[in-house]
Image (tube, rainbow, N blue to C red; front, side, top):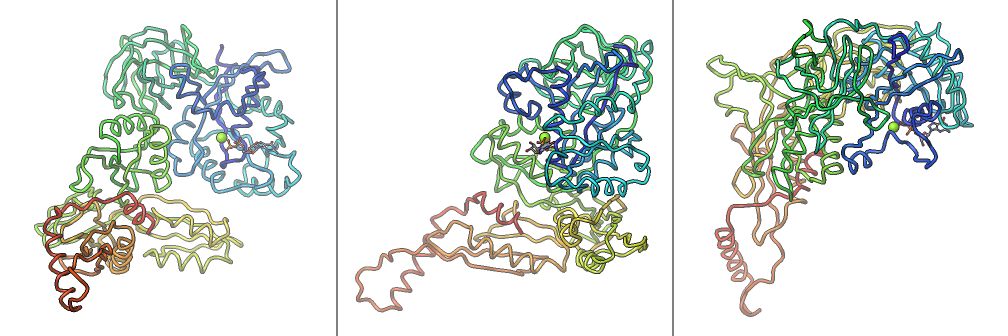
Length: 596
Ligand code: GDP
Ligand code: MG
């Protein structure tokens, strides 16, 4: 297809606003898929992908659209992930698009992820087609939605907002017309050397890694010798093709096209999203720019539970293929064995990774307590950067100071909830930098420790402001902070996986709540088990887990109470000696701790 008849676009929306339904409807209108068997939500069918291996259905799809004037267009819908924690992932798929449909549910209005995704589209300088969906619903509030869309950005006021029902198909044809009219055609040079951007990838057990690419310049042919721009590694593609949405081989792709390359590479680290693929014999000079390296915000250990390390390893490698924002290295823990230290974009990302390990790979894991990374200055002034694992924190006697990462956080909040937001920021060790009044909105700029915002800050902010606050973060710097390590001993031996790094002010309260949680979740033994929390060599919290109630092996009931107790005591000591120091920690311990 000629570039002037190609349009590459994405749909951005808050979860449940109808992205999948609209994608399906577009495929239906363009006859991309026949709906005779009426499979609902074709694009969400992950299980189909799994069971069919190579006939995988992409959620990126090419639609052929015949417009009113008899022209045929190739409309490539590029799928984006839905959640705000994945803004990196969104920006990665948006970098392959030339424009976006901003979809808003008429019954809900603009919501958090609508705003977040819109910002990413704007940062990518993409034209936006605003669309209000679900107008068939009797609770639709179209005027309210229009106003909220205009409030999102003044420049949208000149836009005509479409009112559609993705479900019934009402006005979806107008969406297709707008895509053709408002989204620019690709403008690559078909005669230049091949330049293609990897915006996604999947692992296929037969074919190896399949890279999803946007061709910027030149032509890509089947069985061509290719190479990655990042590391000059060369390979020959075994197959190239398009998304219909099943993978369909073709002989050639050219500038403007969206397609896939079967690389034949099996090592999940061998293909990186964001990299540029070019021709080996006639390479391009510059890679596609604009990829920022990912910044992990929280780190946690992931260890196999009831499954083996090799299965977990394969699963994590495959996950990281799909999710280039997942960072991992191998790690070892005395109490949990061989596993991984992983870095995540946020807590939600951690949760999703854990769920995908269970749902997609059937692997259950133990996830240790999350933390940010720290910088330590030793007494001799030597600095250790990137301590992402509490177990790696040096002994306190060697430490001169500890620095923790701070973000600059800009919040726009309704003036009615300003004081509550300021309380929240203060409790989170925030430093107020500026405060600007803009009619009934106040813009607050704070410096906040990443550790404080990584976990629950956003949810609290949303609830205080009844959903109206917006929140923007940018890494600022590492600042010296009064940070301490809490170590936990169970039965007098340290449990490395239960080590926490916290601000000193929070240490005592956290230590108390950890040992008390442990009291309820630790499996009981025949003898009492002491659980102690230490900071800088001092015990700051302790509980004794009571022994199992036992039928005291006391001969006869006639003996005096004191003799009975003496006997029990002796028995305790013996039992403790007999049992190896090994205390097995069940997952519920880590679940309980993670819940703090
Ligand atoms: P996604 O999370 O953005 O992909 O949202 P879905 O496409 O899965 O839609 C979420 C829910 O909204 C589903 O139950 C859909 O049936 C429903 N839905 C989507 N579009 C419409 C619409 O135009 N009208 C009505 N009434 N419901 C819709
Ligand atoms: Mg969906």
